[in-house]
Amino acid sequence: MTATEPIAPPSAISDAARRFLGAPRFAIVATLNPDGGPLQAVVWYALEGDAIVFNSCVGRQWPTNLARDRRVSFVVADAYDYLEIRGEVEIDEDPVRSQAVIASLAHRYHSDEAEAAAQIDSFAQQQRVTFALRPRRVYERLSAH
Image (cartoon, rainbow, N blue to C red):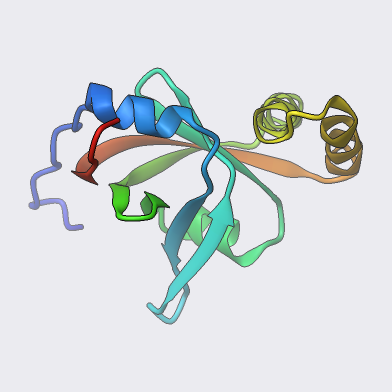
């Protein structure tokens, strides 16, 4: 984006999309590699207010891509229903907050407390980074959510 291009206003997440995102589905995050090619990764996420929050171990390619170019496409699908959110992420490298986010996500995705605790223990050994996506564009095809 050049300085002369207008920045799109934030897009609202509809009530139907909020209900859809409320279930612990997996998301696909698409970033751009240094050569311009796409890279996709499967992530856990949570909707916090108007932001989609997700997290990763530092050193993986897709977080490295986002540190260089914050543009992202974020897709959640369930059969024929899907939601795509495009925008730029905010990056939070605070280790304490990032561990708290991944612990919260582990509880969201693991209903069994022992499984969640085991995941949290393994994540505690990692340097983590958190991303918040505030939608610029939202595309949805949702049936009855």
